[in-house]
Image (tube, rainbow, N blue to C red; front, side):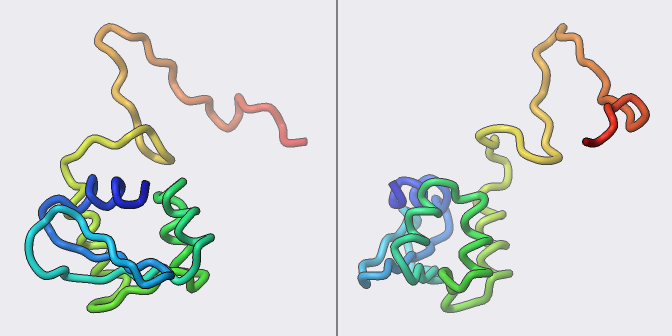
Length: 118
């Protein structure tokens, strides 16, 4: 599952991922990897495989993910460059999914129209 994720994201710029047991995974991009992402424990690997958008940041903050050959900003830049121009899997906070042609869109509720908090 993790190999499929790496291969799907890092298609044009090489990156290496080192697993806790020392095995290394790489995407299909040719050449020497620009960075090595080190995953330090199996729970981190499982969380990233299940939900990479959330788990990558958490793993870095918790110390379960480290970057060799650069820093977290280099990793984020490389990842953003690889993902630019690709459609997202689904909407997230602040992201809108285009409505189908002819669909009626409702405006967002104003704060004065929301029910009071409990």
